[in-house]
Image (cartoon, rainbow, N blue to C red; front, side):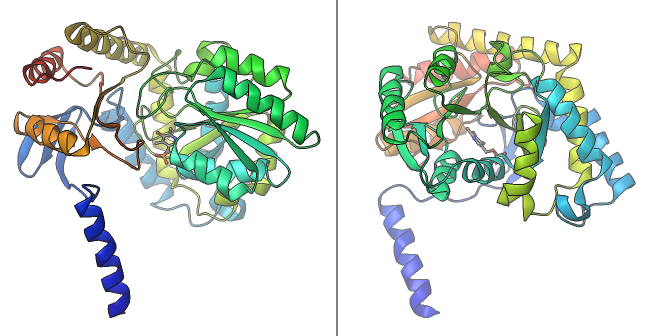
Length: 389
Ligand SMILES: *Cc1c(COP(=O)(O)O)cnc(C)c1O
């Protein structure tokens, strides 16, 4: 026990010396863009609550109503007796929203990725992954036992050469491309049209993670796939219910047979207690709002905020609600984040291993919940300290 503890302590102090130690901040209060930490009122530029739905009264009420009706827990895994009418309705509505035959809800986006990828590929197959893909996608590929090939971020020529190689060396295996539509730490988007064409030319599958695109790109909860009209050409659309949708959970949308297969084979689905029915009820309420005129208005406000920030910072209009300020050094990022916090802005410093070494950054996220004056004051504070996007 003592040896074990001292080994862990050693590891933590090594992290601290490298400027990579992380710890939890306790949020004392939050609503919309307001967040209180350490007794201080701050404006939140760190959340993934792009449409402010995490504090929407109708969604919170649906969660309360769901708890009154169903109780607090689902009592079992989905395949035992944890699939309530609430879960079934949510999956039907999600499929409609995504333009697919069917959808399947997982407890988190991480569970959706780490359960689905190993269910679909394994030894003898090849997965070709964007270099900046989220950790859960990489974990899913590792767990699958498939051969992994990484292409430089959004590099179509290298992606094609991996596809060629995979087809030649694994003529009988599955070849699956895994990428994101909006990249979580950079905010740029994948060249989806070209990727869809390539995967069709080489007879590959596409697994697309839309975590930061749902509710932000396209209308309703379409994401980038729906925006570009590819909903029925992408085999596996993944996303989360905890970002723009403001609740929690993850999903896979695709064909009926894909979903039936995952119900039998995705281990994170089969062996996990179903999400609470109250959570499913809240997700349904959120989906309804996202697809309503109110949702359109929230998205329009988000877009206006993104444009305002971009014009103040003299950059082109970003493809998403994520704008990184890449500073490189982790010390500098920690210093600037602390300074901005003193001025009333909550922006988390992002370091390795969330992003590659020497690309530490302030990850600024915009939301419809922020007021234009708050965005103007952040832009002024950034410019004052010589920070450029
Ligand atoms: C957040 C995120 C996930 C994980 O989703 P959770 O619902 O938070 O588990 C997956 N992929 C990307 C790109 C993400 O940003």
